[in-house]
Amino acid sequence: MTQMAVFLLMVIVSAIASIVYLVLALVFHISFDGKKKEENKTEETAQEDGQREEDENAGEEKEPDEERIACIMRFVVMILCPVIGPLFFLCGHVLQRTVFRQEVDLADVVFSKERVRTNVRADEERERNMVPVEEALAVSDKSSLRTLMLNVIRGDVKRSLAAIALALDSEDSETAHYAASVLQDELNDFRYQVQKTFRDMENEEEKEKPSTKYEEKLIPYMNNVLVQKVFTPMEQRKFVMRMSDAGESLFRKNPQKMTSQFYEWICLRLLDIEAFEQMEVWCDRAAAQYPDELASFTCRLKLYFTSQQREKFFHVMEELKESEVIIDSETLELIRTFS
Image 1: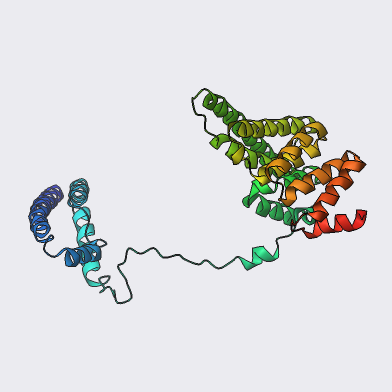
Image 2: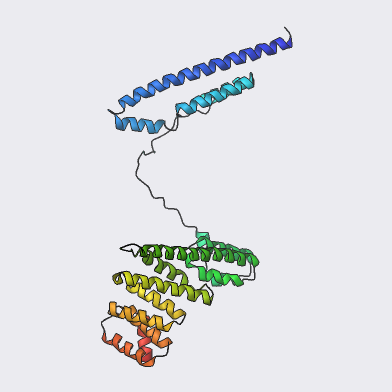
């Protein structure tokens, strides 16, 4: 028998073995489907036991369609790789059944749908290295400075814009680049959100009963950014006036929605840009609507002190002394200073 004859014989035997494997595999999965249908019929009478059994076998059995595809792929490999292909899959199957087959210990496994909150341990090394950005900028080691800057960026960036802005003047160009990129993205997002919300407010005005949800959302959002004073003076003034416009819209639609906190935020932002006339209007409104709130007094005190209106300042202070409003330590120190 020549070598060519031996080779052809091996190819034929390998092809026959591959075909037999494919046929048996398909027949096996057809019977598997029938078995599965029978199990589905009895599932209604034993729902809990069936569910538990299905969960336990979920990791061991694949879907029939996936198994068919896997069998066809093995068949193709065995046809394209005579002898070697069938031997490879045969050896792998034998090893899986003998060497690597182990009984799974499910004693400690609980099949429950209850959610479990995992408590992750704090990163103590990172927490020890957390410092204010003002101090981080004084670090001479560029690698440490960049690491500290990245830790700040990973946090709540919107509340750290003022600190990040300080890094723009850093001697390390990489750190300044980090700060500039984050600051630019956040400020652009702020500009877009403000513009979009005002556009929604204008569309809401056309309705018969306009809602105040946009104003209630916009005022605290703008205050959280404007209080950090990261814009240029001109742009800061522009956005503060826009914030005042949002408050004006809310006050016109429903004055009861104007909380004491809203009044205080608008007044303090107007004080930052020295818009004393507009601030006085809001202070008077706050005093009329919330006469027993501390913020109604402190806003007027700050206004009259900054604008150097001496008589009004002391008049409001006397009103505060005679009222029953609970005074905080800062206001109490102010009263002691001017009493």
